[in-house]
Length: 82
Image (cartoon, rainbow, N blue to C red):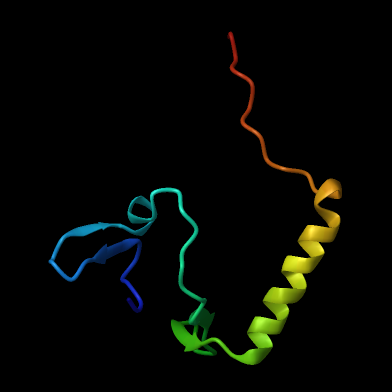
């Protein structure tokens, strides 16, 4: 639990793996707890999630649900025979 450096994590037994591999296609069970922000000095840092962040997330989730039919999804380019 907690934050991890880059995309890797280490389990309590000491095994290291990529976070996405460890999720095995499942949605994470944990709530959002931190956000990366860019400081005035140009350096990245983490800050805790606030009620404001949660309300914005809920608003975006609802907008995506309401407008899903209007969205354009990325697709893979067709194979070229050239």
